[in-house]
Length: 147
Image (tube, helix red, strand yellow):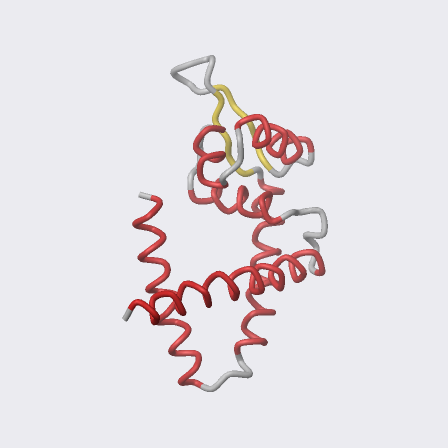
């Protein structure tokens, strides 16, 4: 049993970075050349958490506050994100996607999903079903880990 768990962990450690490399490459090919993976993840987070604080985004992305602040400054400068003063606390800033940020995120996601669908389309229906089930399992595990 333990060897199966270790083999599973090894596979996740080896395959996820390969998948992320393909995703990163595809993002750069299709209109999101200027987006790094952390920037893409930040835009994704902001699309799901309108009004998030810098600390919340940094915690989710796994960056320090100064690094996250620099990343967000770049997104704001390119008009992908909007920084606003919190309505109840002038010292606190909130973040959200701009219309341009929503457009670049949608474009990047559609192009990347299309690439992945084309790639995954070379697999059998049984293999695709296995991947869907495995991704559901990983989602549950990692969503619980983040909570």
